[in-house]
Amino acid sequence: MSRKINLKVGDTMFTAELNDSNTARSIWEALPIRGQGNLWGKEIYFAIGMDMTPENARADFEPGELAYWPPGKAFCIFWGPTPASTGDRPRAASPCNPVGKIIGDISALDSVGSTDVIIERAEG
Image 1 (spheres, one colour):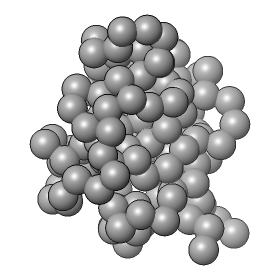
Image 2: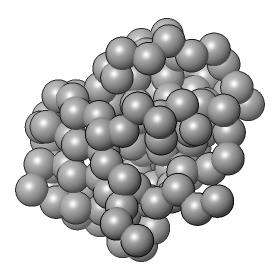
Image 3: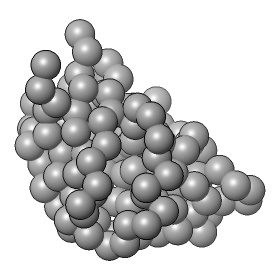
């Protein structure tokens, strides 16, 4: 089953697809979710009030990947280096559960700051 979502980051809209993990399914069932995004390098994260255990957790991500960070109970959007990175790829502060990926161009994330984020199911 395809689980497409819309991510509204400030005034910018992105389409993404959630994977088939238990964590992603739990997030899907909780939609819509709103939060105040915080920046950590080229990562936006915000608490979503869900307490989930590690699942296929890892620290290294590709630009555009989405994850759930168990220690912070937070949703993460990665698009470039973070303070934990050793190169030009995103690296989380500690292992996160991968939950999906943005479809298409993510370059507009470079122009967002700490801002409201809304996650909702995509129509169709």
